[in-house]
Length: 363
Image 1 (spheres, rainbow, N blue to C red):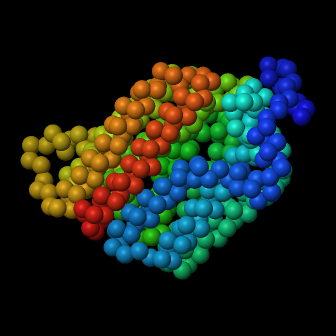
Image 2 (tube, rainbow, N blue to C red; image 1 turned 180 degrees about the vertical axis):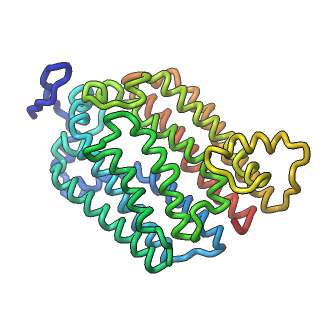
Image 3 (tube, rainbow, N blue to C red; image 1 turned 90 degrees about the horizontal axis):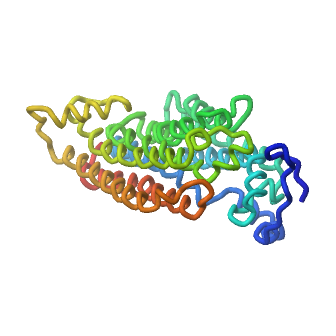
């Protein structure tokens, strides 16, 4: 395979990988399934589930139509993001495959598993389906801004990958990812399911979940530092380096542990708080001379928050054990570092939601 993408002014060398050869011989449907990266789906499905669950607890019922339309929107957006990221990252993926043919998994476009145009068309079609579902929810469920909010949500992810902005290449991609995954997607699903964008259950969860999503976005660039730099992509990792970004991810995990408890405490003490107000308000609530009387639902909110905090602390300890190793090009340790982080995000957040449902009843 002859490639012309330069690294430091030199053409990329060809590579040979039996895994890619095997995939190229696989049926086209199997190659599409590989391109959709099902192992990464929880990154978007978990925030959608959190939003739907929080909305259902707020309304104290499950609206089946809202759940179905929310699922179509979230899955369509997921397919759009996965395929358009492959399409926009083809150049950098070629660099990574040439530099690390054995360590790096086969890439959809550089390894000629599917055509770039096919990915672009399928991704845009998935986006159209997602937006259609959102506007259908607006009409069928009387959710006045579901359609336009969905367009804004899609715009966040589009700005991440698509020209002319392509902020994932200009710096700021991690912040966009944290905003889209950690805030926009759960808020949209909560609104469609329960009629409120920030029901109490979600307002308690969101500060910690957004912080963990920022940590996940930062961690996603750890294994790509060299290839991203060679390919002209600007990320926090290419700017600050692996060790500093690892420390930032660990800090996000600890901050999220605190926010799981402080956010519900702040709400119970002083009413609904904004995302950035929750930490300070929670600290003030802890130091209050006369804390408010707490009923069983309120105690349930704090117990559920403590469960989330425990998941974060355990993840922090387990991540610390491998954090010296996740430096440039240590792919196995970096994967383990991210896997342990994702355990806190996915399982911890869902555990908080389940505990909230069991202990609190109505949101």
